Length: 458
Picture (cartoon, rainbow, N blue to C red):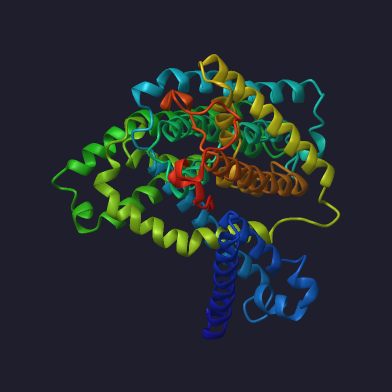
């Protein structure tokens, strides 16, 4: 690469960084999710805004003859994938003492009904032909994989976004937060496993395969074996490696050790044909000690450094590139967006509401749990990105999933801020003397300290 080529690439990357942080900051100041500003930055730099307003500038940044459009796409694609892998690695590492004893019964209800019910209903309606799957299918033409993504997109909950909302509102320490995050961790593990299966089916269901059934079955076995080993065995093995005296790399640099764990998981997953994003999540999950947690504090400084650098550079650019790839032309379907947003939200709210009711929660408790778990956020966007890259879903459905993830995250943040501002409890079991649901607000002096907190998310 010549100096001119390198300079052009750095300039393009710098423009992305500038736009994502300026737009992210402005949206945060407006009490909107930061990731929305980052995605909007990508839209402004994309073919539907910059390309139309200043085509010469767009060509210089993304199709410069000195660098070549193909090479630009490859390098930006590497940055895109690095951002998504770091995001999922950090998300997986956030598992820490989430499954407390007081929440096990309620978590079991949410996981037993709140997650599987919408997933199974969508799968059943899709297989019966009631849901038209055709417009959702991507270039690979595998309808069953697109249906699996559709069902997962209805049931997924955003761990990073919800964690950020809880932190901004000062409620991360509460039982409500512990219950939501504990359920979301186990739920997302299952749903990322479904995405890995959908990806495996897509890779193997092609005309070039000589033995489609046998090859697909082999890949599914490998995927489940990788998932089982990563969840059940690897946390213990990583704990043993972390305590080994001969582990010179760990003593030399905990940060480098954590990144190498990530690279090892991703490299092995690539070799085996397992979904890389799921592997990155499992790498962070294993490093944190698995479901039991307890290991994350040993890598706290390293993970904090990785998180700060990633959220400062690669993850915002990843979200900008998500916006850059959104389709608003002829392939965009407002009807699909409205139908999916309303249908998936209603199904998710009813399912989680039913689970919460069976778990013994009251009216406002049920509403708080249902609206919060409906936030798709980062995982919803990642799900869309991975499925679109694999050719599982169409461009129109990709745009629909991203916009739905943004809207549902905003809904959750606004609702929780409203509840706190009214002085209502998140869970009535935390305060038996709390006001009844939907009563007039308490005097301002009695409202919770988090009432005026910003619910911006990233």
